[in-house]
Amino acid sequence: MKPEISRRTLLSLGISATALALYADSRLKILDGYTPSVSEKETQLSFYRYGELSKESAFRYFSTDNDLFLQYYPAIDVPYANNWSFSRIMSLVIKKEQARSVLGKNHIPVFSSDLDRTIRGFSHYIDSERKNFIESSEKPVPPYSTSGSVYCDDNAWMMLNFIDIYGLFRNPSALNTAIDLFNFEISNWEEKTGCDPGGIPWKVQIPGELNHDRNVVSNAPVAIAGFKLYQLTHDEKYLEWAKKIYTYAMTTFLTKDMTVIDHIDKNCIPDKTFWSYTYGLMVGVNNLYSEVLKDKNALKLAEEIALSSLDTLENKPHPWQPPEFMDIYFNELKTLSEATENSYLKSEIRHTIITYAQKLWSNPNIHRNNHLFSFTNPPLLIELVHQAGVSNIFYTASMIKNRQ
Image (cartoon, rainbow, N blue to C red):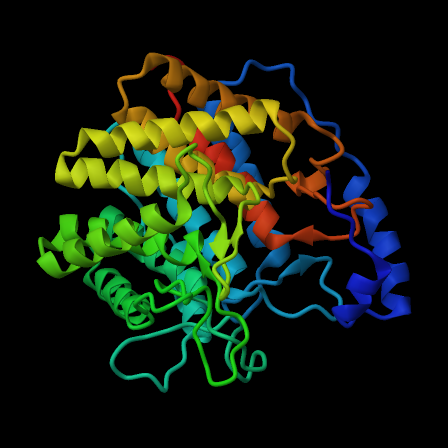
């Protein structure tokens, strides 16, 4: 099911009735002049080209002159991108270089102006008042926007981005930023007491805070980061925290039938809604646990979670999955496909990613002119987070070999 953007939603964003009429005019431009072609046989290079075209559209239509990005296109009375969306546009630049490294012979990663721009843009989300570590707000800080809440998952996505930047370029400042963000994450850890679920909350708790959810997305990415930081630095601190958060996540969010619980609320009530990226993260954290600790049981768990989620996507009813969720899911599945010896699972992962990418490119109801992708009905707005997610999926598809 595709999400509807209602008049009420648009008005809540500060879009006036006059602006709605302008959106209707702009919609004609979005729909006009593009008929996607499926005549060519997709190859790894084909998907890379799709990623390039959709990435260039993201920078062309969403970027601003102050190193920030817009949340929506067209941009009428709509604020700058939130931190979650910004993390996806940064991941897009990183994913491009990762794909080039896989596809190119003797390729040396390029620290591009686009990457430099997103790093500068990230500084606009940082609360400069904190001295012992950094944390970023859900919105750009003043004067670009009003102050917002601080979400632990937002900071986790940025932390993983900076770990990837260091992995590509061995840039010390990127590693230091990732470490600062990791220290922020673990500063929010709470031990379980009574019916308080413990762990790392979805958002930073403040006096009077009503949201006490503990989510997969605020815990598993931190464990993943801990394992990766340990691999990079050999500092036991990161390994110990990674194992601690991993144990909490596996105990709290995974059932015996391989169902991943999205979150636990303050009353310990689990939400079992299927979201692809939560399954991807549980695949990823088990895959890394296996890699770092040489634990075959963890790899088996990663395989079982992957197979369970693939079955759900193929055969069972579930909510519509945004492309940015599928991006994260596919990224972890691709990594698992390189570690597993299960030939059936390898084939299923490849088939799912390639087929999904092909359908994105060839569907004229999604793929608009100028290589923008819309998932709303009617297609009044293009969302930055969707555009970045689609681009990343194409780059991931370009790194999946024709035969594994």
